[in-house]
Image (cartoon, rainbow, N blue to C red; front, side, top):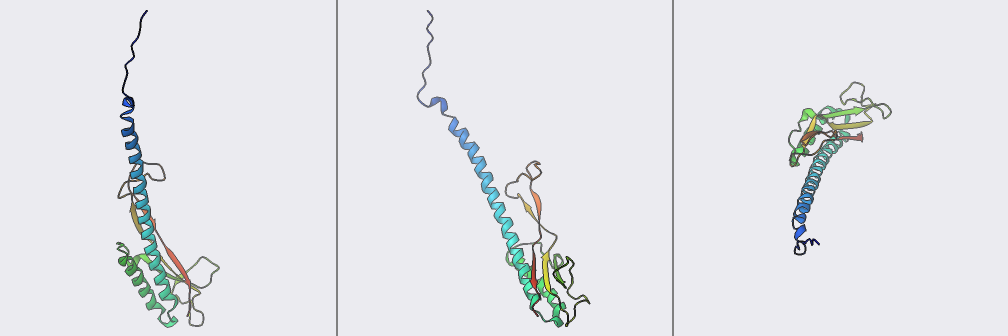
Length: 169
C-alpha cells in the first residue's frame, strides 16, 4: 500500500501573494478614477469660467444705449478675455469672441450688432456672445481612452460656451 504524504503549509501561506496582486489591480483602477475626476473638474472649471465671461460680455451689450452699440462690442470682447485671464485660462483672445445681435427670436439668423437692419426705432431683440475656436487638452495628467475606443492618449476638447440675453435699451 502506497501512502502519499501531503505537504502541510502554514495557514494562509498559499495566499500570501494574492493580496499584493489585488492591491495592484485596485490601485491602478483608483488612480485612473481619480485622474478622470481631476480632468473632469478641470474641464468644468474652464467651461464655467468661459461661460461667466460670455455672460459678462452679453450683459455689457444688452444694457448699452443703441447709439454706443458699436463700442460695446469691443468692450464685451475685452470683458470675456479679462474673465478668462482672471481664471488663468490662456488662449482666449478677442478674435475668438463673437458678439452678435438678433432681430427676432423666431429664426436662427443673427447679425453684427452694427448691421444696418438695426435702428434706434428698431433695436435688436437679443444679444448673443459666444466663444469659438478654443480647445482644451484632456488627458494631460493621465491619458484617457477616447470615445472611439482608440489607445490611451491625450486629446483636444472644443469648448464653445454661448450666452443669449435680451437687449434692454
